[in-house]
Length: 171
Image (tube, rainbow, N blue to C red; front, side):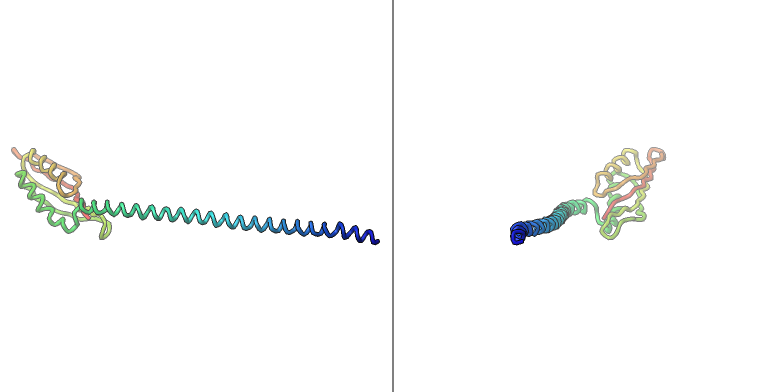
């Protein structure tokens, strides 16, 4: 029996150590796999947050550029309270072109305090066709941004009567 005990000890101890080492290796393998998965999740989270940060930086840069365009747009479009001068300015243009005109401002519609506004207007007048054409060209290239919706002409002797409907844009 002594031989069997020795054989069991000689084979059993290394075999036990091998089983213990294999168990530790399997455990460490699972642990390393879990940690690698956790590290991969953190890496993906980091990448997504980095993409969000890049997007925010891009939006910030774009907003700075838009501020420049907004300032230009504010210079192009008159302020809404400046539209009080619109009829006077159009009368001055009409007088330069030898036209007898009457301007009526209508309702304005817009989007909020800092938004864009559209105010309807109606122009009635009489004069020669050439003078009306010059007047309309001056309107289109003037200081106000306007959109003409309709132009009606009617002959009255040597002169024409006209009715212009449109919108003037402001901020």
